[in-house]
Length: 249
Ligand code: OAD
Image: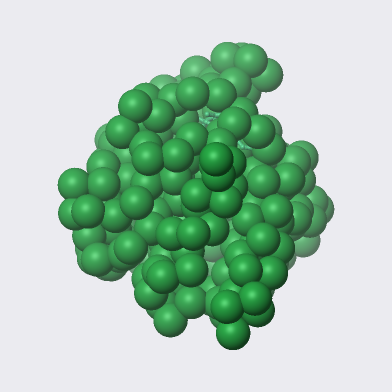
């Protein structure tokens, strides 16, 4: 009897297009807090007071300080073996894409090139008035800051009630509906429309693999569920795949 990792590797051996859909859990081993776990951000803080445009307009100092704090954590941590395994996968298949809900930029820092960011990127900031982008590298303000035009500067992330970046979402749907295998990694898969990605993949006939510490909303539709840390499971899959591939070649 094949174990679950072997089943996944078997599928990968004939796959031409592989997509990895990620959430906060993939960065947990780097030290970035998740949202809905026991120690997750949304257990202690209210999203409506921090992660919406209304919240920003009501209290720009507080929201700016909170995003500075998160950006500082995210720029100081390093990608973990899960990010690196995903980056290595890009060179192993004819087509490969990462679709992420994370704003931490760790996939790119690990070397992934084709990355669709559904919820934006915390390293980018722009003026809400003139839309100019501002580089805030190594600057972590604890109060709201303004552009030369007088407009408030906000992080380029998607807040509750806002639309996803249209180009990123459309490309992600194309990936989900045309891939052979989709991995859903470290996400509770409860925030829509991002959470449609694994569902679209499954409906379009892709083999759906979930990697998570726990069962989630999409575990029932997954073909294989691997319970554990993504930073441990993903490198095992890549190693086993490379071993099998050389055996066949
Ligand atoms: P969540 O915090 O909802 O879920 C994190 C998931 O990662 C959970 O299912 C955990 O079990 C799992 N997990 C934790 N550590 C893990 C590890 N080492 N290996 C594998 N899995 C692990 O985070 P997301 O699903 O990303 O949106 O949340 C989706 C969106 O909700 C976020 O993008 C953010 C948030 O509000 C916005 O800010 C718009």
